[in-house]
Every structure is written in C-alpha cells, then in structure tokens.
Amino acid sequence: MASPNPRGRPKQPKTVAEVRALAQEKTAAMIEVLGRVALNPKAPFAARVAAASQILDRGWGKPHQSMDINHGAK
Image: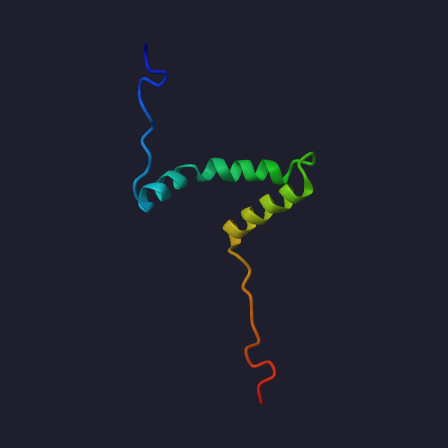
C-alpha cells in the first residue's frame, strides 16, 4: 500500500529566525487580507475594527500610554 503522503511531513521551522523569515515572506499578503476584512461591509464589525487596528499599529506603531506614577504621593 502506498503512503497517503509520499513526500512525508512538511519541513517545520526549527528556530525563531526561521519562523520570523517565513512570517516576513507573507507580510504583504497578510496586510492585503487585513485590508480586505477592514473594508468589507459584510464582515462582522469586531473583525473590521480588529483588522483596521492591526493595520494602523503596523503602519504607525501602537499608541503610547502614559502613567501618572506620582498620583497621591506627598
């Protein structure tokens, strides 16, 4: 009986650098997917907001948060 997968299991990345390189190869395609979701009026509102937020975070960086560490100090 022949194996249902004659080429065997696909090679998996072994290091963080390999995972990062694979992800970077897909960046343009994934930005395109996020853009289509964000602009799709039939997509759930939460999905549209999440996609738009991800695009903005990558294009402009996440908003900075400030903290008042002296609050209540005398």
